[in-house]
Image (cartoon, rainbow, N blue to C red):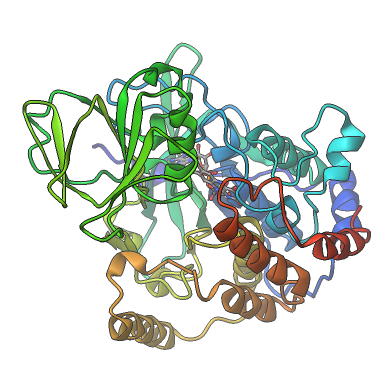
Length: 482
Ligand SMILES: Cc1cc2nc3c(=O)[nH]c(=O)nc-3n(C[C@H](O)[C@H](O)[C@H](O)COP(=O)(O)OP(=O)(O)OC[C@H]3O[C@@H](n4cnc5c(N)ncnc54)[C@H](O)[C@@H]3O)c2cc1C
């Protein structure tokens, strides 16, 4: 691919925030410290929840971010794509989002929202026509993110319909400046490339788009249809079919229940189930739990590890997603191996080029929005020089120590960004770096209460709970922002 000459590069000079923008932000600002460094020109990739809050925090710190978003609107994952256009149902294709029609949040809204912009049902009530449920449908999350973007005047920072296709270091040493090539996705499919230079890149491209697919011996000759949950929307096309779902994640659970209402049979293959598992699921007469698939056959049968077999029409891979940064050139100083993005100091900065390249939102098994917010505050503060990073050597030592700890626990590399047992410790560490209060106690308790409730009432946790006292505490806390 031809690389344009440096003398053809353009410097981007985004508009400064208007007086009204500054005023509206001041209303919800918790604190602001002196900024020792000049405003930087920053490229943010993505206008999902992470990109939006990153843009807000960067601008609050006095920087000038430009947000590149290939979709026509904000929201990322929450921008539901009813009819994904894809020729390969196992691949990402052109489908923007991985949401299915029936999706309701798996976190209570009080927990899920940004720290200083409550995701409160009162806003839905006030707006009329909103979804006031504690675990609302996906439309309500999109409304919330759109409101966030309006409230903090972020729309003007976003270049919609613009995809970042290449990011490479501009000039040698230190990782100081970056050339960003983007292309406008034109109305008639006309595409033009443009290259500009930025002082730093903040990557917020999400990690629920590039499907990870299970390996099934013999599947090439198996005559049925395979698809990934990324491309699942509604159950109707599976009417009267025999469907095998691979996985045990939130999507696998939701989709298996969605399908049980219309399919002839649903068989869930869970790799963590003992090899002899084959049992009907309580409350269903057409759904079974199995151990993992052993192999698939030319005659249409799929054989499980216990030797039992099912003649199936569809195998649905609810097997998660892969980190993917197709726009980063080899000089980005990171690699992705076994779904581990490495080396990264505290899952954000590649030491070699810190702080000029950063990643928001990599950890999983977390409450995403507050974590994005704290990471963004940290990145913004570090870029202005207000918050200090350790030396490159010290950051590399920290990364090595992290990997040694993973090895000692016997964790595979792909668990590197699994925060199931450390998210609040991490959040509070970030908060401390930025001079921000730690995560609220009620949020931590509510998260734990929701996990317990989900385990106790897997079918009904979204509509029945025992933590109303925490809901009341959150409502009280939210008063300072509403
Ligand atoms: C099925 C499902 C259910 C979920 N349920 C919940 C839930 O209940 N609660 C919760 O808190 N979280 C949930 N999540 C997690 C959810 O993904 C996060 O809440 C959050 O929306 C992720 O935000 P993000 O900004 O990191 O990524 P995304 O929302 O994926 O946004 C990334 C954006 O970057 C853009 N982009 C990517 N590459 C480029 C490029 N090269 N150039 C320009 N733009 C680019 C994309 O178009 C996209 O808009 C769920 C996720 C899935 C998939």
